Length: 151
Image 1 (cartoon, rainbow, N blue to C red):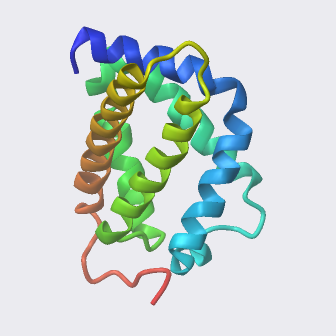
Image 2 (tube, helix red, strand yellow):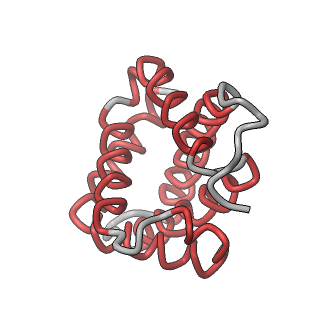
């Protein structure tokens, strides 16, 4: 990512970080409305999962310049998700849902133009797609014949 894109992601993250509990809750509500088949992959109480998502977004947003250092932990996270039953086809709806929630958070940022919001949204898309690629690379480490946690 360019230095400008890094700056936009950091600044946009800072603008919606105070609302992170609200945003992560909205993310999971929308995700399960879109893909109810994913709900069994999670515990009934999503509080801890919402915190993990918030912490992951913060870690990524604050360490963008060193994203390559996060490559191996992201691959491990992808392997862990695969062991829990997450499939490659599950990634696109997760990314799209997260981008929708982030886009709406950016729309509420005062004094930002439509153009800057669009640039920030595009930056977030590139970032989340890169994260997904690393996670999927890690998922391939999981034995393909291993039984998944869901049908």
